[in-house]
Picture 1 (cartoon, rainbow, N blue to C red):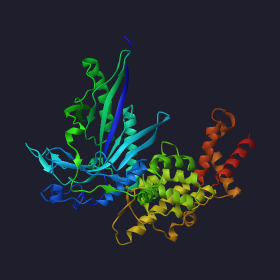
Picture 2 (cartoon, helix red, strand yellow):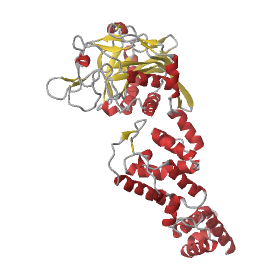
Picture 3 (cartoon, rainbow, N blue to C red):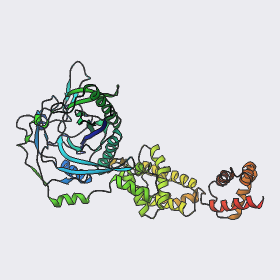
Picture 4 (cartoon, helix red, strand yellow):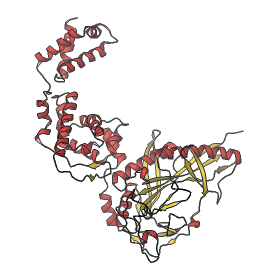
Length: 519
């Protein structure tokens, strides 16, 4: 029997909570962790006679995201009522967009398996979130409506994924994107980003081509759960088809949930078709119109986006491809690196410093590099001291540590300021501080870390190292297999003996001369 060719067909729906201060249709605050049912009003409770008023900031965030996703922004979009009855939806309908969404026809390009994967975006539309059912208070279900009415941007892809790895990669990049734009914190532990993959299989045999029934896995709130659910569902559907032979047909779409403990999907209910929701235009809201001029204005506000910026950082700063995203993820840190380069800093050395000791000092303080409070100019000056051969890399680390400690002291001596959110939600941001005490040259002189180019002084250090490590000297002279590492060891010892003050180029030359002269 000829083996069937099985192809995964995977699309993704992503709900992104927008970072507005108030809800989509009323002035209630969007606040995670507030006492249950304390952030509600007649509008989000669906009380008779309450009329919605659109949150303009949510629309602006949606347009900005749509442009970043290469979508077309509709000149006219419409609000629709999506009818369904659940306890967490007090109006018994959700205000959403159906046939005239705000953003349509975009794409994201990802590098996947050494090729470019183009993921098409079918639509990105605005809607309101439902409340939350609570099941752990006793033998009953409680409802918290604080979340009801929170603005969501639902991003729907075409079924362009063929593996769980691709789905997870897209989800990671989408989270980076919305954080970079500052439109969402996308904190999955707070439910601010939720994934719902639609999964089935196309099965090709010599006799026919069929598809398995589509399954939508609901409300996944981690990359791990998303990857696990897609992987499991692909296996489950393959086995189910081989056992039952059931194929896709009208009415046999289903919703399933993810059991994180057992790492399996579990049945929930049949999936509704569009007609089940009885969409119709919301009579309380006029259509949303967007001018071409306003769209172009918003386009001009787009920052350099994470994917192209990562590629540029790899090229310009010579960063390892696997490490570059760490500097790009926080937009303020990436901006600081570019600003240090624009201040004249040596780009390749700046890249090493940012990935090295600046990142370490930031991690120790539970912040980002931008949150350290240093100016781009001082970082550039430190990088150039290394580039000009005036200090060693080891000395640069010591000077950087002194700079960070001094910034901590300066900030501690000032009146406490309210931390302000950084663009991209990568950290709370402290205003950079500067003073003569932060001059890297002064610190290098104070700490006696300026490299010596005095040949006599360096020769003295070389002689001491040769006398202390005769075996390394013998290996460097007589053992072809150990010659190079032994020579490197001797240079390292000279730098250590000199406290990092020896000019490595001069030290290396003197080591070579001594190795050959005494043979």
